Image (cartoon, rainbow, N blue to C red; front, side, top):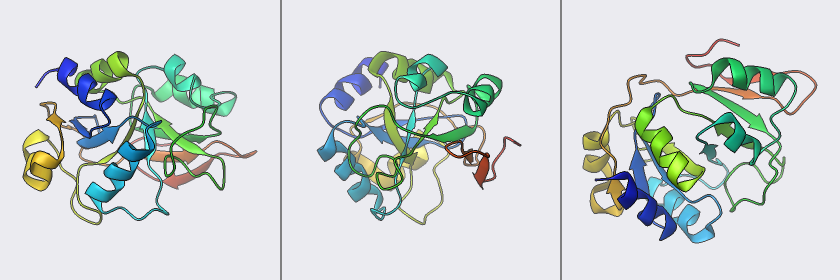
Amino acid sequence: MTIEAAVEAVRAGQVVGVPTDTVYGIGVDPLNESAVARLFELKGRPEHKPVGLLAATVDQARQIGEIEGRAEELALAHWPGALTLVVTPLVILANWVGDAQRSTVGVRVPNHPVALELLEACGPLAVTSANRSGGVEARDDVEARSTFGDEVAVYLPGTAPGGEASTVVDATGARLLVLRQGPVRV
């Protein structure tokens, strides 16, 4: 499948598969309520577990959330890479993208050429790992397809070389708070 087919699917509100530097993911347009609901349904993800966003660049991430101060330092030092920053959103996102009660959203710039090409072409995506909730994360498009079959409109080919979920750091408070330790040490 091509990037163009994936962009078309995203714009049509469908779920797409995309390799990242950490794990293979499935994603949708974060502003499309029905697409985000479909993503949660497909994964079997509980509503209380929000998903984050992938962006193509630090500048694209700045259009989504407040990337300043220590968050900006971390972004410039580790993006693209396996670091998710929890920040205050600057746009209204679909339900379950980020945490509406806390007014936060996780944002990351992945270090994978296929993911970056897709994000450049279509803008940020709401993404989660390609597995049923509680299952083992897919490492490539073949594993993702064996889990989801035709329920995902487009699977971009590729492998996630990292195999470990990103480090998650909450940058909304006075001090940085590591929520999940992953490959990036903060």
